[in-house]
Every structure is written in C-alpha cells, then in structure tokens.
Length: 227
Image (cartoon, rainbow, N blue to C red):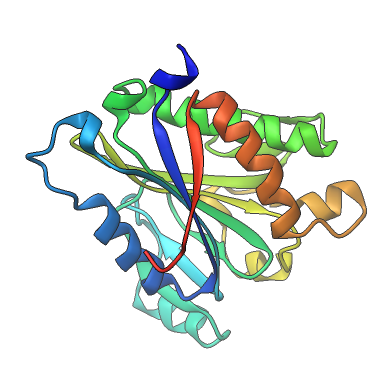
C-alpha cells in the first residue's frame, strides 16, 4: 500500500474529561451519514484521560445496583455501555484511546480489528521497554498475570467505537474494588510500575501514535480538539 493510498486518521488530543463527555464525542464522530461512501467517512483517533469512572460492557454480570452504589461512594462515576467486556476502571494516568474508523478503509473484520489493537499495545509496550507484554487467552494485554491494558470495542456497520485503556501512571488502588474485566485471581499493572519510573500519558501517546500508523497502515493528521 502506497502512502498516498493509506487511510487518513485525524488525531484528537482531548485531555482529561468526564466519561459522558467522551461518550457524546464518540457518538457525534461515529454518526456520520450512512449514505456516504466508505471512503468519505472521516476517521478519528481520540486520545484522552477520564475522571475516575467504572464502566461495564455488554457482558454485565454480577454487578447489581448495590455494587453501583458502593463504587460511586468511592468518588467514581459508573456507566453501563455497549462495548465488549466486563467491568473496568478509567482514571487519570490512564491513556484511553478510541479509534472511530470505518473498517472498510482498513480490513472489514472485527476480529482483525481487535487483533490490530492488541498488536498496537504490544508494540507500544515493547518500544517503551516492556518486552514481556503479550496476548493471553483473556482479552487485553498482559505482563505475566497482570493486565496492563484493557480492550473493549463496539462495531456497527463497520464503524468502530470505544477502544483501549493503557495504564501509564494510573493509581492502581482503584482496581482493588472490582474484579477487573471479570477475571478472578489476576492483577493489574502499569507502564510506570513495570519500568520503575513515572511514565506519563503524554510520553505514551507519542509512542502509541507511531505504532498506530505502522499497525493500521494509515496517515495520521493532528487536528484541533475543538472538533
């Protein structure tokens, strides 16, 4: 694929926002006219951090109203979403990346898309110096028995929403109040914990963007976040 023929993806650096604002932005960017030809769809990569929030995906078992109240009392929000996966936490120090892309401009397969996201995170971690980051039988990316990145996506008419949450310098104590992604006996980790230094979201973004262009074979264009 030549550079000229590669799909264009606009990068939006949003900063720290509440979860609902992120949901509304996803909805606005993904609801482009379905009458448009696939190549007229404007692809985006939203980069952000969320204020503390617990979210549940479509496989929402075991978390009832009492659990929701308990988690809210910790000072976090709580949302039920249409993404894949079970419960997870988003908060400051975690890079949340939402690709809003039309898969027919890339490879028209959700299986390929999830695999591409896994490869993106593995390459990002390895570029930063974490060589053991890998896939397992569970979703997300792991360093031994601890998850460093959660993946939860949604696809409709080849258009993707939601995405990944990469722990950079996240306060991991938030995860102690849940069973992350519904997997018993497993823990969580972060880039900072693994590398024994503070790895910021900003540092991680620069590496992730480089790897995103490689894995998705696309051109990236920085865009004003007033979009």
